[in-house]
Figure 1 (cartoon, one colour):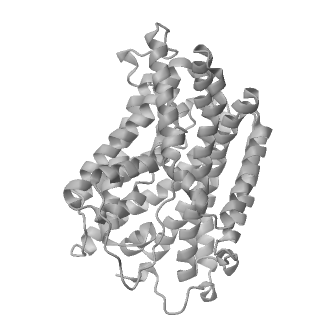
Figure 2: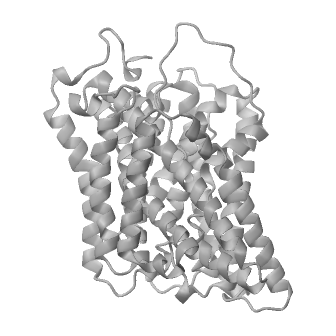
Length: 487
């Protein structure tokens, strides 16, 4: 997964008595962060740029990943309840709802893009030609999503462990194999499909479209705000947390960059599929080394990790939205109902109906890679709203509540927030420029789809819930204060 293969933090109820806090080492926290952020899914997206992918990963790491990690650490060490509490305290409760809504809403487009990757991977077990088939991809998305809803609605906690193994099964082992085979491939004198000379370190400038793919990397690095909740578990947060984040950033960059380079060594950019690129590279390497029988095994590893991440995401953001809505009455009672297993089944089913309609895009638009890219951009656009609100709230909280206890204080907070805000705004704007990989499709159609997805999901729907909500929608136990009401 990208980052978003692990759910964002959800509000945690405050117990009457707290157990002694568990101490984490800064190395352990770095590994936890790496596991939640790193993924091979985005590798084909950057492999298109060959050696320039190094630059395209480093830039968002510096201007987005680092500010997000340090700022969210200060917020998490001072206020429980995740992004809703941070934005509610710093700005307002309606904007807090907007933030937690966007955390949830981005998954509506995230699932089709994630399962589009899974469908292309499965195709290499059945028939590689299916990887470019829109109807096949749409069918797989619908079947797997509703299977995931059924599993999640039964409260099957054991399967959530699949996500914990995702770093090893679906990322570290396949990624290492891919890089090692690529190095051996080049070491035997085979030419790289992408130029590896110093003149190709920077992406070729052909207008804004040549840099649009960098937007996808912002979402690749998202999720740092979840790991920030562990900052208070460090012995010396002020010194250890920055070390942990720098180590995690280095590990994440290695996991992102090296597999992307390996793919670019063997698959020409004009033949690379944004959904099936990882399997294209595996297939090419395995065929070259006469070990083609490993292709299905690699596919199963990638699929199992992605599905495990999907199950965890199904339970995470929707639960956070449910708990806040029950306390504050943001959603109608129908969407707040729980099934006999205590799962927010109505939210999952409603989301599934929308996801199914979106999945039809794969069947209706001939180019599967274009659909995948559009969904990825909309996902990023919606999620960027969360970070814009988070950075703004952090700056205001430092001014309005300077003496509020914080276990960690980010250095140069204002600078970090301004850099993060500008980077997020730039990514938001660039997202409306069609990628050079989008092909010859209509620019205005692209803008309409991306803009429509952002406006409807990111603004109109939450505005409607706030506009028409009623006092009776508040269904939490009487006298139970919300996280946003606590100080």
